Amino acid sequence: KAGVTQTPRYLIKTRGQQVTLSCSPISGHRSVSWYQQTPGQGLQFLFEYFSETQRNKGNFPGRFSGRQFSNSRSEMNVSTLELGDSALYLCASSLAATRVRGVGTDTQYFGPGTRLTVL
Amino acid sequence: AQSVTQLGSHVSVSEGALVLLRCNYSSSVPPYLFWYVQYPNQGLQLLLKYTSAATLVKGINGFEAEFKKSETSFHLTKPSAHMSDAAEYFCAVSRSGGYNKLIFGAGTRLAVHP
Image (cartoon, rainbow over the protein chains, first blue to last red):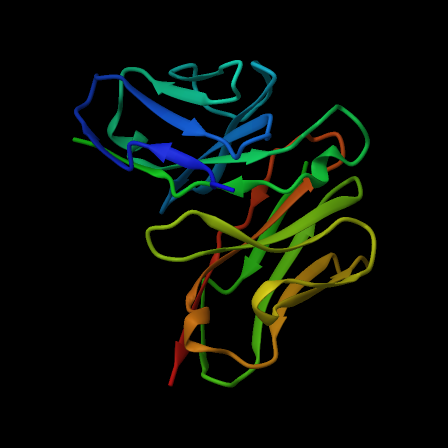
């Protein structure tokens, strides 16, 4: 079974531009979560999508947004890029069937990430 | 609120020596705990997870971790280090009903010397 794929793997943008990152989950997985990894702040949760709905959100400004399509593929968008947005953006997918007790135990499988550099 | 503290940003061991990576958590509700490993230029790979079943959890590549509620700890161990274990290790916590939001520690970089 193919793993989580993220495209592109590397991106270079300039301040003020916007960027869209893509994530294809493992086949059959319905939840996609996004994380930002930086040397200073570490790994931080951005948001989670399930059945095309955002059901959890981290503490990031509104410039960070996402969406999920009917095939569970997800995109995240960052508008008006700032230097501090330079990071590795990781996508993770999981089965996450329904809202039941124990859903927090769902194993998340991570993709290789997209390295974004903002100049 | 939940949080994770990993003691020691860098740990260095000799090949064949015991590996011990420390993780302490803070949670007002029963936590679910995870250890992930990240190799250079790669994503995160799950080593093991604790979900309120057995307190001693065995994972891949010979790693295991013990959940100690009284100490709020979930330390990762491996009896004998291998050169291929050199990587960065992250402890993470989530909670039931918290969907898939993982709160990560700052990470511990493990170096293995011959």
